[in-house]
Image (cartoon, rainbow, N blue to C red; front, side, top):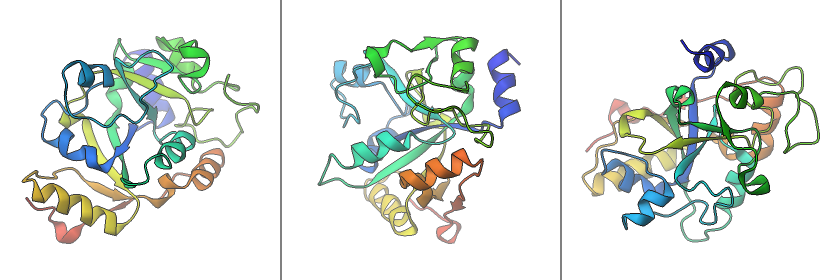
Length: 231
């Protein structure tokens, strides 16, 4: 194990998160390479609906993720932008990207001061869990969930592509949304072969923030659908 991998194990970090509009699932699951950066998608004229078209961090060549739970503050903000396509999902990504040598870290929102705080390496990773962060005006609470960065807006920026096998699960808001996502993909003859979790707390900013600061993990219910996702 390298140092970052050791720290991830000690903290109980199980995954990265990446949120996207559910209408993007068909593009991702119809493409063996899964997720691409905004720059790659744009340069190759590939269909995409960027979550952050501005990318003030200047690193649209990297895919924005977060550790263990989504950046709930930005998640709420972007969900309010599109009044037509309102459904979003949270992708769970294999945690091994955290110790890739070309992964970068930012202890606060990456766009802060135009990407000034984005760096790579063990010290940059450790900065995610410091007592303070450039993005907050408080210190890390004693009970703060060990697996979660001090600033819930902290980011992990990953080099593309992120192939489908790196997606280890999909979180939705409720059972009804899970049914709709499967149905929509079935209509396009796309098999949903990833576990789907119903996790309403991921979509509630105040609840998720409070639970993390109290050291409590959210409840995640595996969506069964009779044990069959379908084709």
